[in-house]
Amino acid sequence: MATDKSHKVRLIRLSFYGSPKSVDADIVIPIYNEEVRLADSVSTLCSFLDRHSRDLAPFSWNIVIADNASTHASWQIAKSLCDWCPNQVRALHLARKGRGYALKQAWLSSRAAVMAYMDVDLSTDIGSTGSLILPLLQGGADIALGSRLLPQSRVTRSPKREFISRTYNLMPRSYLAVSFHDAQCGFKAITAQAAHVLLPQVKNDEWFFDTELLVRAQQAGMTMLELPVRWVEDAGSTVDIPDTVKKDLEGMYRVREDMEARMVDGLRVDLNPAAVWDQIRQHELRRSLLPAKEEGPHSRMQNPDKETAAC
Image (cartoon, rainbow, N blue to C red; front, side):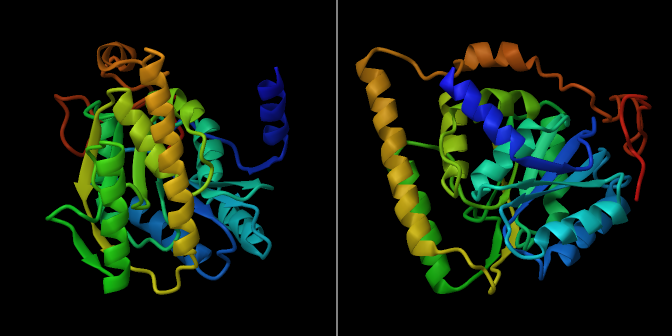
């Protein structure tokens, strides 16, 4: 009962500007004090999706700004962006800081078939957005993640950041026996079905959220699609790397301890094994606007339950 009460308290502390819509994809941008670049990034992404969606990525979408406890003008800017494009941009404000917490709340309040997120600096080339989302809408995977460490990826960053990234991503592969290569790239998508199974299992609300989410997905036998990306380092990043690494190591230790405790007790993880998960997902996502197989690549099915109005 205590857990339920605390959950209700957290929901009360959410402020929504605009309502969730039944679209194919919600693309969440988590922010904290990003008044300098927020407007440019959202307008750039909105223009790209509006310009290319009919030709390159035939899905309906919303951009969701998830403001986690900004103290500057970010929330006012977010609301002005919603007013500028009310049919395709909405926002939520949380009184509590934490990127993982912001993503949890944005995804759990979503009505989309697929939920994605990308960093506000748009370091990952947004031209890969269709490649991230479409396989999930088509039932080919449960989670898609951009990876800067695949041979086909094109990455521009300092030697220091390159060394830290490669070193960090070796740790979960060796310590937690995971198969994915890049846990921290801010370019991921998940189906609604997978999200509602995984998110209650993810305890971290900060930067380790990504890694824990992917570890839980692998434990559940979910299908993960890792994509090569073009990525350019943001010179203005304010991420505290030493503190983030410290907390991530603590998170990996906790997850490892949890895995070992379940093995000792003869228990499986809380999530469904692969065979059961395949039955749950049923290979068919709800409310999709993707063209039927017999239709042309640019055609769309009409669905009165979907909202597709442009800005």
